[in-house]
Image (cartoon, rainbow, N blue to C red; front, side):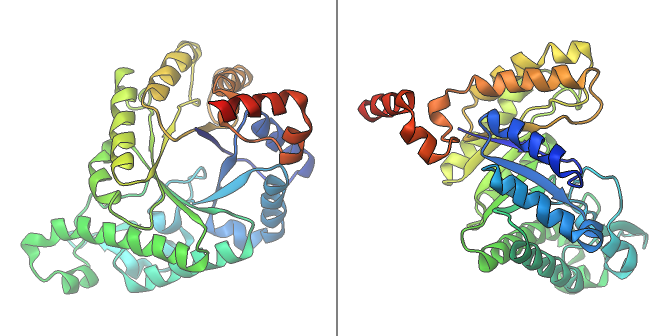
Length: 330
């Protein structure tokens, strides 16, 4: 069972970043998710390069999240996509001719730009893969000229949107693998999008299927954590994918903090391949206490499952050698 921590903080202050990555690593985490927005690479590429290398030096792999690209994916900064703003002709158009601030995934110019961006990011920075955070399957049927040309049958247009969205994700992940064959690909859904699971797991180039188990934000009963989690885990196992389940350790008041442990227990009961959470994320009543609780929960995962210490440290430690011998017997 691996641990991933989302690090959605500035990379400008090297000493602070080093300290944060050390704390994350000490929980047993093996990787971080870092969200990059379009303007970050354009405005401060040196800071981005330096920060991601610091993660690598700390022993953390980096999954890069495409924040708000085309306004198709989630991102920590609530800013619109520069590309979509500058290319309104790529936007989704509804049946009434109104344009929506999301680039149509079928528009060749947008796809070409996005795939080129992915190639550049994978080639330029110390990252291990690409994660798509809450991809937006269009809730508006697109009537743009591209979609109409690809699907002349207007009665089939809504179903075509769904089919073409899966094809778009498949092409995106194929681009990742073509640039770097060992790069990992992951997609993390909101619970209301779990109806896409059966189609997503058929994408050969997808490695990890995840879900944000944010029952509190969605005003659902805590029992849904286990229900959603098992849906993801079972689908992933049937198609030889990895599963990743996310704990909501943000936006917590004092009452919400009391539910961190029981929600964590229900998350673990689904037996995912990976667990994930946030580092000092937003709007907690007591951020320090929430992070300390989160660290406590992460450390309860048996240490022998984590393999996070440097190899030389494990081999030189009498305790580690003893543990390895016992594991070999098991």
